[in-house]
Image: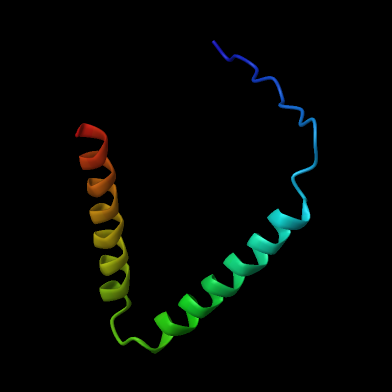
Length: 67
């Protein structure tokens, strides 16, 4: 039962100026986060804080959808 997945063919390029600018911005933010994480003695504190923030944001979205 090994089904082949057909490749997706894009009708336009993903490498637009807008996408590339966002990629550069994201790269900078990740580099900044990486630098900050390296100076924290216990990096798990940062990771746990990010996980908790993500969970909080998700709950807010669910609450909005349920109302």
